[in-house]
Amino acid sequence: MPSELARAVKLVVLDVDGVMTDGGIYYGVSPSGETVELKRFEITDGLGVNLMQRAGIEVAIVTGRRSEVVAMRARELGIEEVHQDPAAEKLPIVRGILQRRNIDWGAVAFLSDDLADMPVLARAALPVAVANAVPEICSVARWRTTRPGGAGAVREFAEALLKARGDWTKVVEEYLEEREERADGSA
Ligand SMILES: [Mg+2]
Image 1: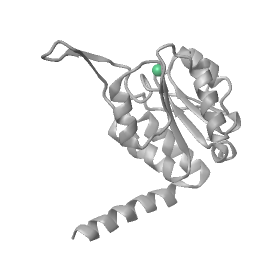
Image 2: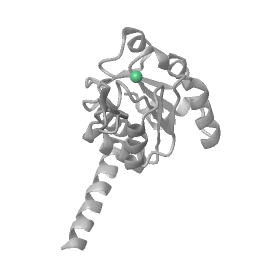
Image 3: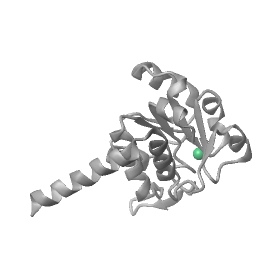
Image 4: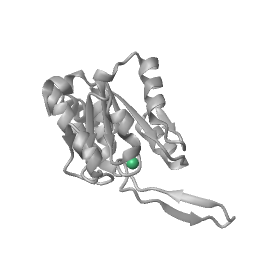
């Protein structure tokens, strides 16, 4: 990943299905007859998000499906910009984030797997295709993960981005020191 491009990134936008998950949607029915929708998130991606946030990067979620589990996962990760739009109008959503945060397209990375993301990818300075992305997404991507969505793609990207920026060692040390202090405090 080119370090100049990586250093310019202020906003990382994550798609959910096929990027933060393997794309599988589990349907079930509660005892009271309500439909329940479940997704499986990858735990190592969570620390990847945390490390990017530590480096001062805003991480956002923009998805074309509405699901309570996405809101739950976002809260867990401290992600404020969570947008679930069933119409999958991702471009106006990302434009809104950029306006609110005073960020331009030259500072945007977007992780994608499928065609609905194309209008955003075409504008983002760092379009990223996960390993399971469709060929059209791969062809416009400037970087590709070797791991598929839901199996560490976000973590792999976070590590590559932070290493290319020269931030990796610092944020990992900071994270480990915090863990150490907490362990001392509870001893
Ligand atoms: Mg997707």
